[in-house]
Amino acid sequence: MCGIVGMVSFSPVNQSIYDALSVLQHRGQDAAGIITIDSNNHFRLRKANGLVNEVFQAHHMQRLEGNVGIGHIRYPTAGSSSVSEAQPFYVNSPYGIALAHNGNLTNAEALRQKIFEQGKRHVNTHSDSEILLNILAIELANFPDYPLSAANIFSAIAAVHKVIHGAYACVAMIIGHGLIAFRDPNGIRPLVLGKRETVDHRTEYMFASESVALDSLDYTFVRDVEPGEAIYITQDGEFFSQQCADNPKLCPCIFEYVYFARPDSLINGISVYQARIHMGQMLGKKIAREWRDLDIDVVIPIPETSCDAALEIARILNKPYRQGFVKNRYIGRTFIMPGQTVRRRSVRRKLNANNIEFEGKNVLLVDDSIVRGTTSKEILEMVRSVGAKKIYLASAAPEIRYPNVYGIDMPSADELIAHDRNVDEIAQFIGADAVIFQDLSDLIAAVQMSNPTITQFECSVFDGQYITHDIDPPYLASLERLRSHNRKQTSTSALAPSPEFENLGIYNNE
Image 1 (tube, rainbow, N blue to C red):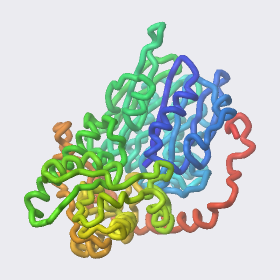
Image 2: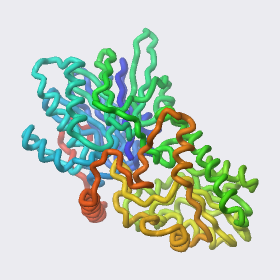
Image 3: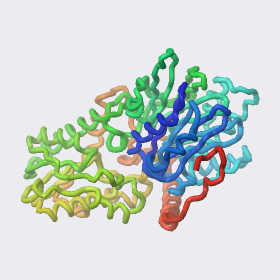
Image 4: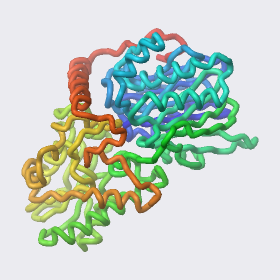
């Protein structure tokens, strides 16, 4: 899962994009990048592996001149963790185009061949985002007149929708024109629009993966970018929008609300905080109805995403709610960290049990989801070691049994704890006295409460139903081979320097 930002302003955007990416840091911790268009119509780019505050130092920020820019934070899915895969990407022809992308294309390899045959273009990385950028460039090159009109740009994006498949929320810039934002016809990945007025009554615009990034910069939330829609904003602030897909339908990823998004975000008309409250209510009712024989002394969340749900569960069960874990906030998310060994080592550094809340008690732990089970197993061992009598684990999400192909790092079914295991086997594997999962129908109902107009969610990790209807076993096998190859590359090159972006002059500010 990645985070993207795009801005058209009447003052320098470098600091604002930096601040917005910092707010979205939870969406990716692998790499970060910002690209702007300066007054001479040159791209100014800085990107590297690391957190936002590690990638951008003062001298980088000073060189990111311009009033139009896009930014990206990376969480690797397709591609690898090499700095060469960091975004944004750019191409010099036509005009000069830069792009940042959140999601994953499901026909990337076929498109790679199309790019070479049709556009005589070379794709230099394994990133599907670079493929998407080149497809956009090919379509824009079909319009020879300069400058491009809004109609030209929308026609190009309509053509892009027809040839690419998968999940994509994108922000892009065209030299001499301005900023474009567009979203796939299913609206799988989120993208929101905000605006604010300057003192001289001009309108500045901003796009971001989550509304919380708008809030942090005092932009007013306007709306979500619609599925299949494209929005074009010129460098002078003229606003154009058009539906560019034939049959758009909003089917957002439900896992955004379970885990990824910040609770203070509003996505697709749904408050993430309220959705998690409703998840807790649904799960609490299920425990009270179907697990009434459990002897529970205390309800304790595994911080932090599950805290809101756990509070509701405790209320419904009429049991004490306690904060039993102290979190080290300077350790990154274990789910995002590459490799099982790294994840396993990090759990004890990330969380510490407050012994007094566990000793001699029967504990109901609450987590947002159980993916690989590695973290859950380590946490339960820790809780046992400080004297808990019985440990029950409740998940606000159902069993994750299937790979994700739309931008979440869950491509291998064999890595998922619930794949080919029943609930009792899962409990035995992680060392729990009982494991309780949310029903999928209840999860959908919980998220849907805030926006009943959404009739379908992308739930493939739970039900194996892929909304793009183009996923088959050979595709999943090829995705796993690619991911296995990239894991090996990452492990052998983790300590090596990354010189890929040296000596690019004005285009990269090292």
